[in-house]
Length: 104
Image (cartoon, rainbow, N blue to C red; front, side, top):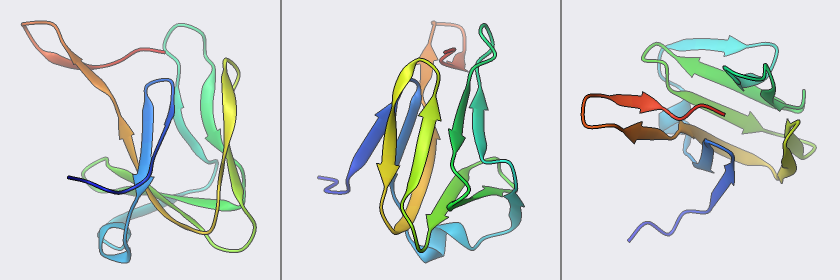
């Protein structure tokens, strides 16, 4: 059984990660936007204390080093993250034809 800590904000799931996961080919995203809502334009956004990393395969991770970071969204309660490394997972749904990301 997976004993890692999980956080959830809408269709976004976040879990603890490791250095091995975050340091594989990709780029740092400066603005901290994890995902934009298709219907509303609302965003899941990390405060500047977190460094968001997008790997070449599209997977996302972020690091919190000194001060706690906050994930915000206009329709959800904010989530505060202590120092550490985290993996971002976008939930998907299945409709018998294809898998697709859940729209927020």
